[in-house]
Length: 331
Image 1: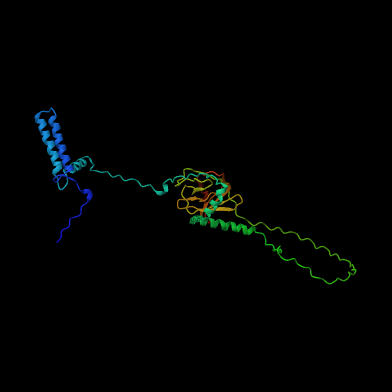
Image 2 (image 1 turned 135 degrees about the vertical axis):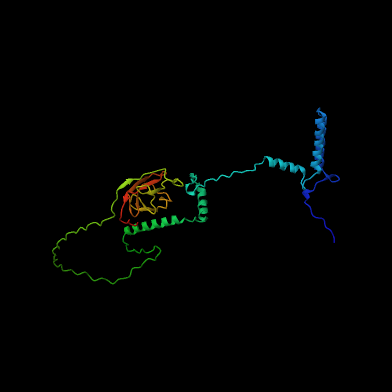
């Protein structure tokens, strides 16, 4: 059977200097001999000099030709030194895990972009038209649908009655030719008959109907702000409302309905508190005066007044005025 040489890694090959002695072994042996010559040249006592000379030459020969368990002696010495100075005991300390709700999110910085020149505005508009529209979150979609339904209700109530359409002939229509008519007979004198005047009917007295009772007005108070409320991230956008709904004892009220109306008494936002009693408006409001009405079964609240001026609003603290046994009206 033909024998084939076992392939070896080229980079592990060491050049042989004399017989099987490599350059590395020759360097270690020469280093031990040079150290022995240095000790020999020193003016030390013979009982100190000769042991050092023998130890240097022996150590150089051992490093070059004496492996232990197929490993050179120098690697054993390096491993022994590392084992002495390396730590053998490690202390583990448990670190407390911070909850996600208490982490402070980094505040966003808003920079005003320089207006694009007129020459590049058309190209910018065409490029933006090719970009796909960003999907809206479910909360934004629910909020927009609620606002559209509310606005449509007011528009249908104020919509005027439709007027009949007037057809106008187009300018490109051919001119209408007059139809020839027969000659009219000569007018004859009319006999004037006396006109009988009827007596005017008696005037009816106007009946004034009583006004329909509207929604009872609640007392209005100014909104109170508490910057120290526990929120994961404080508001950073202007005219964005956040806050908490609490009872008289400071306990959290979950599932409270919050309606925000503008100066014309038109609802612009409808929010609901979460399990922590917190609420937040996703999109900012316009500048102006607003009313905030809170509804929760078993609680009474005052209507809050707030004026937005295009500034960052601190968190609102809404506290119940009292408790009631009547169920709250649905918005």
